Length: 199
Image (cartoon, rainbow, N blue to C red; front, side):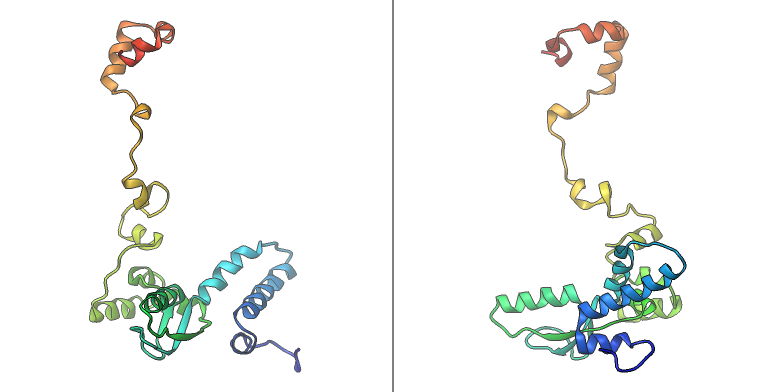
């Protein structure tokens, strides 16, 4: 319970009550501003932003992983690395969730192209060049910037190796033109299926 009036520091909520409590607090605070102006926004839009702000964790103990104490890493990378070392019977790392500001969260993305397009372009590109970073172009933003197909929908790699069954492949255009040249549209529809299939 609150002992004093005024705004509560979200970092304190995260440290004392945990991640879920600070997520709820931040969503409620943002919604209260919009609702005071008569604007209705679904919680999920704000939750997405808050989720990105809590995407990083700070390493406290490295265990047998390749992390460094104090390093900020993506929580999914942290989980994958721990699963890997646990599978080998080794000690996992421990970490605490970190609440980053929107600017800091955007700049700490794995893609330096995406980060450079947001703010501090010179610094981001300089650090990327000095450390020899490689951008794997896995997000939407960086693919749009370099003019590539975005990895969404039919642009996903999954669909590149997708082959249709032969019975669903359309007839070759030349064959269709010959058919329409010899017969009218109504006549073609009345032809037996064997003729249309070429049997």
